[in-house]
Length: 242
Image (cartoon, rainbow, N blue to C red):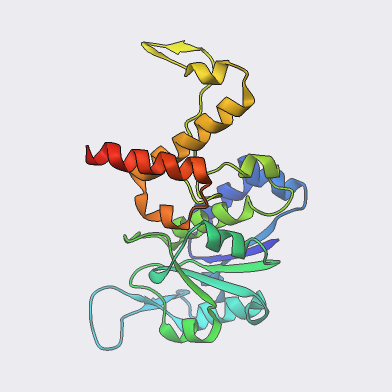
């Protein structure tokens, strides 16, 4: 997968690509990237990239010309172009899986009051929201989306490590423990020390169900539950009622 990031602040995203799992994916050639400062495509003496909005109002709007030239430079019309914005479609794991199948992604990092609508109409394929809140930086939301997407590309992370993650099966992930067996007054659950794989699997399934029920009950409608899990769900509902 190749990723282009169009930004006014390259330093905000460059370290992400040179650290941790992403750095290893880049070294292996699984991921490639290019950071484009669209200020370099402004043609006036001050390299201006924003202006006051037509119709009045607070703040500034990013101009068409510099971003349009940068998008042409990265061949955006033949790639999937993403603009993170609070007014976009809500991002989730299913959406991340869809994007992970793309060979090329282009991200436009917004700032100020946003992006001239004509750039969106001409180039953007996906307007994506990472949540019902507003950030001052499109770089931050772009990195969130990229982080969720690239790790699903084949070869970046072992497939077995992805199978039990939150939302991979419609439920939140079960609790994890490591040494020491006892920390302060809390111990590792006995079942995890038993070596009984079937009991451990059942314990993890039930903990995923309980966590989801308590923290994100609205996602349960998308989960695939076997008979034992459905029975446990009924028990949990009755416990909460009682």
